[in-house]
Image (tube, rainbow, N blue to C red; front, side):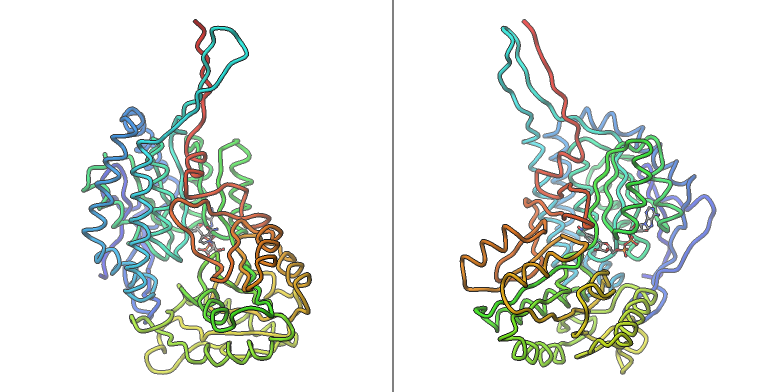
Length: 480
Ligand code: NAD
């Protein structure tokens, strides 16, 4: 697949105006995968202009017709699911099987929004004035600026592009620099399936060079960002200066509580999946595992034993793959080392895998840590890798308090057989998503997802809730 990944503007491939490229490496073996257009402000301006020109005709296309075009994209994605999955597999290092599953999720999401073309409801309601009819209608915002991370790349693109398009916006998506070809193949498929030129534009490049100008551009009416809390705050500050609408889906440090009445086998299974699936590169990963004192030692032994049996690699038989880049890997190892120096016990992992098969890839062994303060760096900052911390608590009240003692509030899970504990936890935990007896993740296309505190700015995507981000409501009054 070594080749060049250009921008996609106005329905065509375009190299960056600077003619510069940067290298994208394969996380599994460190080899060069592709050379990627290094875009800057002028390229972004071209893409926004293309979107601005295409948007009025797209907005005038009835929503039902827009939905039919989205449905054609969905069908084309189904036909090319294997091609998309292969690109995701190569760019992320996750197994082909997981990449295929992720692509299936993106297709499901597209199907949901294609159907929403028949349901872009407003409201009709009563008025206090005689002979007056009042209603609301949804209208597109205009140009949507979309910025995504690399962790689940095809799902991330689908989560933003499909709802933005069904609402009648034209999009400029800044692809994640670590998964450029995934965004490119999506645009190419969408265009071939009948999406008019200019309605979806893809800009490749680095965040500060290609993402920031998109946020600053006065013609971008709505910004939807998924990524780190640090960058999310920068984006919020920039968008605030021109009062642009902004949706922020940010980081998490998600608690998974294991009570003394839990089904321990089930709890261990889900704790491992929550901590390590997708190499822990999930905003919803279960990175804080909070366990009742009376079962702590048994649970810890089971976790260590199972974590040591996990297969790490890029094949379909492996449990999880590499992290996305060497820079990310080195950051994780440094954070673990600092924790060790402060007295943390590294129960398993904590180091790069260098044995044959892993030696050139960006692989971190599954890492479990204990004996660390709830306000330590590794307790409070998102490491975005296969790393989880175990905490010992005496009872439910302490578990709930510790679950909530975090700057983040994205997802949370409890393992218990008690209905009373389950209900109290789901109601009182400070998170946008609360789960009983499974993992800290598990979003569905029709369900709103998003977080509290540092995990977002209160918006929810996907579901019908995302329509509120990508459309404006207009109140209409007709007096007879
Ligand atoms: P990141 O914030 O570094 O980058 C995300 C995207 O933002 C990339 O495309 C990057 O190029 C761009 N970017 C970086 N700096 C920018 C700037 N100054 N202006 C505009 N754009 C900029 O995040 P990452 O490390 O690539 O991704 C991991 C993060 O994403 C984690 O924090 C994770 O929790 C979060 N995430 C959140 C969700 C959610 O739904 N809440 C889902 C997936 C990932």
